[in-house]
Image (cartoon, rainbow, N blue to C red; front, side, top):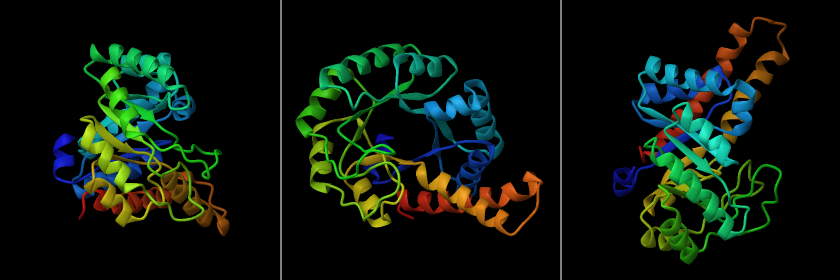
Length: 267
């Protein structure tokens, strides 16, 4: 991933929620010959079941011929991170961003310690990136000095930073803090991650990548386009065979992810 940063290219990390969204993102990566990261949140794991989700992802990567990795997104406990490591995740995120700094460091160090024996990477978050349902008006940008301390004390591989993005859709165009990003990138060696990539204009995504962002997360837009397409298809149809209606929604995911892959690769 550091090579991608040097090349000013990004690696797209896509969440999936069922077989259809999984196949949608994998087909996009396969058609463009691009690698990607498949992500699961705790809620998606609860919905699909851990083993079912993992086996589907690993089988899908092989069947579509895609170079990819499986990542726990926004892990909320050491126990969940451990369970994901046990079933073969390539990397896990422990999100202690809403905890006091000392507690965030403590819980992150514990996950880093556990991941070492699995040769798995660890991602953490520092700063305030609004989650779904939280206010976008609040700002808690990652402080460069704290980022240095956090990376040095935890030994993480990747750091998600708060530079003006938020999870979910934006009511107005986000304004990323590029000076802050450049400052953080100049001070730390870990991979930098941009959460809340849905809805960020292509030009801003590409500028962020040019300044040090490597991993770009995409989730909300995938759910949205799948469901909006499905709703449109079913609006004037009495079709009950999901095998006939789901493929159209899956195709819409594929086209979306292809667009995002081109953006992060600067193609």
